[in-house]
Length: 510
Image (cartoon, rainbow, N blue to C red; front, side):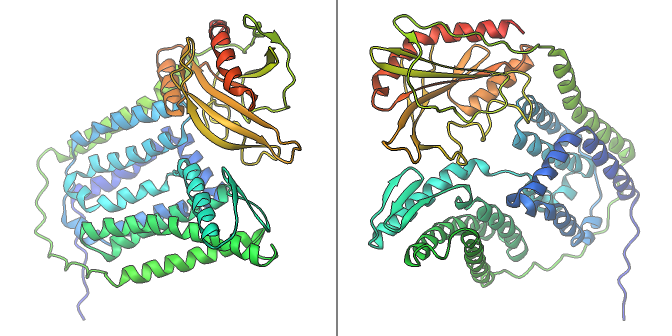
């Protein structure tokens, strides 16, 4: 029997394997809070618990091609250290605006680029997929949830009507003769999609060799769970309807969903395996070329350059954060606009915004029309207390009293207002007679107005980089739906200049 003898490591590999863990440890030291936050999400969220397996799978993928890797010689690439400046800047912007996804993607990208810079292009090409697979460790995808919920509700209602069951739908809620149903976060299918795409990508890499088949299967691994989730929601509603709501409710709802999803994904993989391509025969490794003169110095230089550039981001954030010595916020009352009087009879509604440094909620009336005003002012924002976040909304899905029936945008065309504002119809659940409100929402960021979450984050980052701090506010107007069409535009036009002056004066009191 012949025993394969692993050739001894070349000096270039011994040096690379010495520098690599040191460089990774250096990066984790400077970005420890970001890495810890990422692992914390893996631990808390079932949606992203699979990410615990991503680093071990990456190491296994690297180990399984160790022979081919050792046949190459690490040749440091200083040019690959240049993009680290971009990922460091991206991390800084994310940290300044408390955007988890941006800081975590930037951290993983920095780690990947650092490895590539140290090992060079030829080795990095062989490591392309394992390194790219590391990005599945970033908890990312919740932004798709609202749209996925809308799709699920639309398909379920369409399928129920096609089955001959009358349905009354309003937003994500619908009523059938046997009861009320609602599409919530758990019905979005985001867990199924993220799990399917992660496993599907790994399956495609291991079973196919052509890029076309790999990309096709990855696309299928996204589309199939979306459609499967629609069918799951429809089947659960039908089971509840036909059984008099004795089955497919409560915990059964989730159990049946996972069983159905598991069966669908298993079938998808079984079908995909029929078109698996044989693994390409490994080419005999060529004689390893001797590393060029000066490689040792270049490796230490590249590691040092990457280390210094990567540390610049956290150091810059510390400097910016320490320079911001703003005091507590005092938000004054808003005087009544011309023609309006303070005080009005409005339903007891408050938007689900948390973490504000100061809040103002008041109401005004004129000629029998009532309008409410809410201002949430934010200063010294962080991951626990920030203006723009998915949990800050007009009515959260966990709100037992109010829900959002519909959303759209409005162009107010008035001075002191953004070009567009977010509008929503709010419905008080269980009220008789029915109570509806119409609300307008926009953001004020250091004197600039926008209704876009992304634009608000960008403006906040620019404000902090310029040394003006992160003062920002959400402005919400609301009125009874019956009079909102005339009351909201009239009040907005009359009050917007004074609201902007109030917020500017609050900003100047930093």
